[in-house]
Amino acid sequence: MFWSNIALCLVIFNPSSNGVVAFQPRLGYNNNAVRRSVQVRSTAATTGGTETEAAATSFNLKEYMADRLPAIERALDESVLSTMPQTSTICESMKYSLMAGGKRIRPILCIAACEMLGGSMAEAMPTAVALEMIHTMSLIHDDLPAMDNDDLRRGKPTNHVLYGEDIAILAGDALLSTAFEHVARETPKDIVSADTVVELIVRLGKCVGPVGLAGGQVRDLQCEGQANVSLEDLRWIHTHKTAALLQAAVACGALIGGATPSQIQACETFALDIGLAFQVADDILDVTATSEELGKTAGKDLSTDKTTYPKLLGLDQSRLEAQRLVDEAKAALQPFGPRAAPLLAIADYIIQSKN
Ligand code: GRG
Image 1 (cartoon, protein in one colour):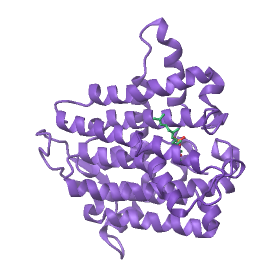
Image 2 (spheres, rainbow, N blue to C red; image 1 turned 135 degrees about the horizontal axis):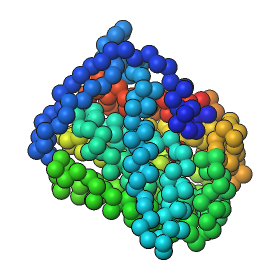
Image 3 (tube, rainbow, N blue to C red; image 1 turned 90 degrees about the horizontal axis):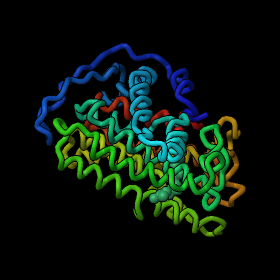
Image 4 (cartoon, rainbow, N blue to C red; image 1 turned 180 degrees about the vertical axis):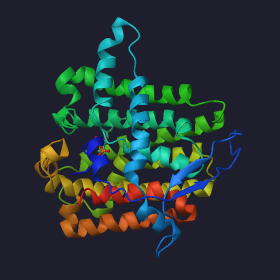
């Protein structure tokens, strides 16, 4: 079962880290601000392999997540507030899905990337919240009768089942627009420059549009029931429908942390690969897990005649493909050394827990 809830996530990880590698973040970057020093817990350079691999292998992801998830949950909870009686229904509907117990992978990726570059969780939090709002919007819309028509999400009734289609559509729209408002309003202006905030908004906007979630979803719908969907088609769909938001999460986090263009590129390569691995693993789970384990309807891909990785490659080959993508992703972060440990551990976990 893949990160079905935070509690499960916290018990699965093997608490093995004991070393602490401290590093000083670069000062100034693009933001001319003094950054706090950041500690990455790892046991880098233990036995064999590269320093990066050693750090990832022994990294305590359970502890890393436990340190950050409460702040993420709090920030999400505070991000939607009804300020007048007229907004109580829309805010309740937005909050219902936002707080319905997702794994918070996108916020964590954003924060981990920011910290890898020497930034802090506080700087990245408004973007982390926005990413989860965008993701939640896409889930609400994906579940609608006009799309995947699902009545179960994160183990709970979908938004439209509870609030009706009209409100669900509007809750998604409101989450999407609030995401952009939140980044612009809440990103600490004394630390993150206005130019960086504009760049964050550009990246977030791009990953939702025609070369992001919406475009990927359209191609997915067009390919449903088609006989000749190729591996290349499938890759395009998932690169846009799933990986683009993960790409934005990691790239935005790195950008806030003060990454150079080549560092951002390395982060994007990493994120696109784990985004695809994530989807391959998701396809595998759709045929191997139960609805209870998934928190959503299992076997949906078969019943809607979707082309999936298991359908094109078979289960064993799909598992190998997921591992190949994760290996490729991890290689992209070699230049960051032990500081990449949290991101590498997340990459591993994405497929370990699904296989
Ligand atoms: C309305 C502009 C606009 C875009 C939406 C509906 C849609 C277009 C896109 C669908 C995107 C989608 C649902 C992709 C699937 C991604 C995926 C694997 C989701 C599951 O993510 P997890 O496992 O879920 O992180 P939790 O519940 O843990 O957050």
